[in-house]
Image (tube, rainbow, N blue to C red; front, side, top):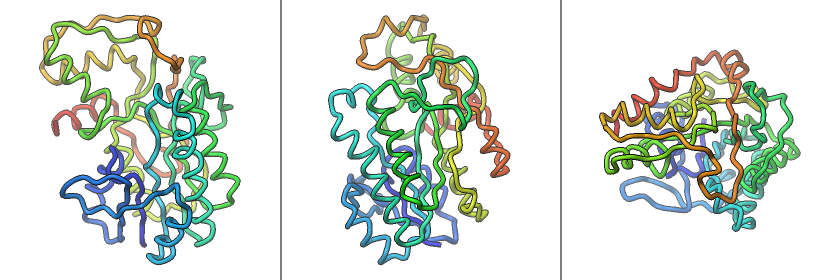
Length: 290
């Protein structure tokens, strides 16, 4: 099969690149940015015609969309760009996938939910985003559904990796360089190692389970607050920084983040016969690479 990966120079895209190296399938990695030493094809997914040309000419069977506008705070003042990348671009990919009979694997987020509950969120729960980021990502999901293309939408949360800007890399640096830091404890979720999500996507493709279309939740096993997550990062890094708990209101932000966005992953695990590692074990894998 021919697989097109968008946003290939981001956290998830780079993990997929590493894990697909030994695959018998043909992976084509695309992005609008370049990383020295990476073989990446330039593709602007906000341009439907450009997407159509590459999907048609390369006879693409699967599109894996890892591209998104993910700066939650900045999105509040950058609505047009957030909409372009999180709603319009997925709509373009979906229409092209429908046109050529390809399957679209799209990454979405826990931010499509309000996060006001206290029970792990199922795929059947009603979305209620409270931010521009969450709203544009939900609109992207709806655009894919309305296109009629074959699609697998994977909602994930608290994504981290050895690459790019993420909580693990930030806390590793802070707990190494500062004597003390404050981290919120009233937001609970499931840290997700991008390598695990990449493994899951590769598993779906390599085991030929692309016909199992629908929306699924994928996140690290277990639930934790940002405060507890930071403590474990510091511990595994061997740092002695004092980490103090605080409330979300102590940090100025344009966005009210979900207070509880743990995703119920049982549907994914049962449907695709895939075991999701415990978050502490995956964190150890990531930190060992840093």
